[in-house]
Image 1 (cartoon, helix red, strand yellow):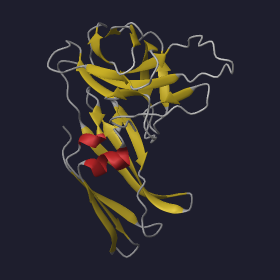
Image 2: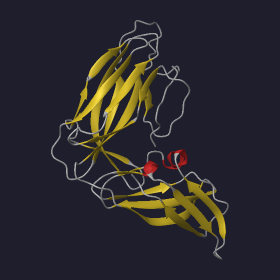
Image 3: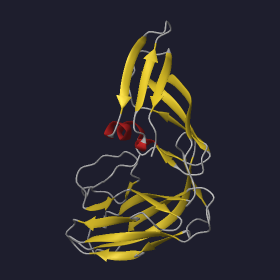
Image 4: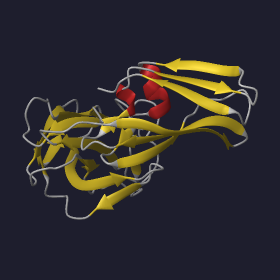
Amino acid sequence: MFGPFLRLTRPLSVFLALAGLGLSAPALAVGVSPLVVEANEANSGTDSRFTVDNADEFPVPIEVVISRIKIGVNGEIETIPGGENDLVILPPAVLLQPGQAQAFRVQYVGPAMTESQSYFVSVNQVPVDTGGETGVQVVYNFRVLVNVAPLVGETALSFIGAEVVTVDGKARPAITVRNAGNKHALMSLLTSLKIQQMDAGGKVVFEEKLEGGRLSDVFGIGLVMPRSDRRFVLPIDLPQGGGSLALEVGDAE
């Protein structure tokens, strides 16, 4: 899950990594927005950039590191070697002065695509010797998700599974989605999703229609990579275990 904007206060810690996966925190000294960037292989038609701002009272040196990723069926993240040269981030490094905001442009320079690719752009604070007596230093690390789509492509979403599962003693809906297309899909861009739970006799015991921000609440961004399946266990408390689920799905953008 990737939130739209994250900030963080300086706790007494040596390293702080924010992956943007549904984390919440109080106000941050260094912020990145947005944490999801959409692009295409021709770098056209989209504003493919993110902004880093420094609300700290000290200059913050920033560098970016690129890695290509793959999302597994249960949301596990795998780093794919060889993708670090597919993107160019401009500028690749900067010294952010107090109160300064810097836009970073994302450009795809990799080979011609047959299907979407996804990348993490790690926005890292470079450790510096502050000369302090304690030797304790806070280092900020954010990860921006960059999805790059082919010029000719489409998503092909279908819901291939829905069941009631138990998580920490609570009944939850588990939904499996298949994207048979060559372009990535984002579950947060569905227009709507209605979930019904029926008991063993077929009586409806729960119903909720997810729209807008509520879709982001339960799926996060909900990236489904091309030609792959993704299973989501939604943080929705159902009134009882067992039974069956029915889904009524709106279109994805």
